[in-house]
Amino acid sequence: MRLSKSSEYAIRSLVYIVRSPEMVCSVKTLSTALDIPYKFLGRIMSQLAAAEIVTATRGKHGGYSVNRPPERLSLAEVIEAVEGLADNDRCILGFESCDDDNPCPLHEQWKTHKEGIFTMIHTVSLAELIDGGPGRI
Image 1: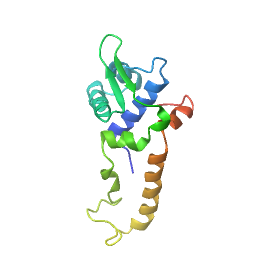
Image 2 (image 1 turned 90 degrees about the horizontal axis):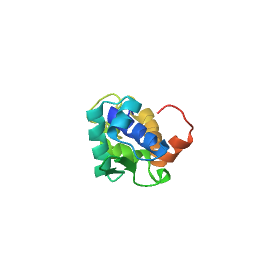
Image 3 (image 1 turned 60 degrees about the vertical axis):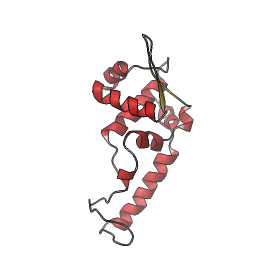
Image 4 (image 1 turned 135 degrees about the horizontal axis):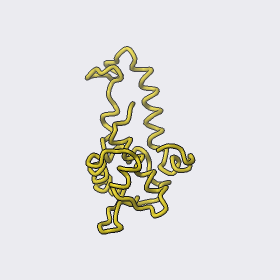
């Protein structure tokens, strides 16, 4: 499984917002600080707002803020909001049909890893990324 750019940017933006002293950031601030294309990030933030992960505040000191404590926001919720999780269930070799009844040569090995990744994205919270220290985002 590989995250799309949309998911990568969404997660990085949320971490940046929560780490910022005001906990409110404009798309321009996020775009500049994280080197993410402005228009692309604007669409991502709109998707996060539609999923009620962030709230948009208008005005001179407006921007986006995270709607709930980062401990209560899983990576899966963020990924679902911007790209959906269904696409992450595809065959690792690209076959259209790949399941227990019609497996590809790597199905069993991939199934184990895929289940681990699925569990991880549902259990890791945004807080865990923030608590991981001031590393790159």
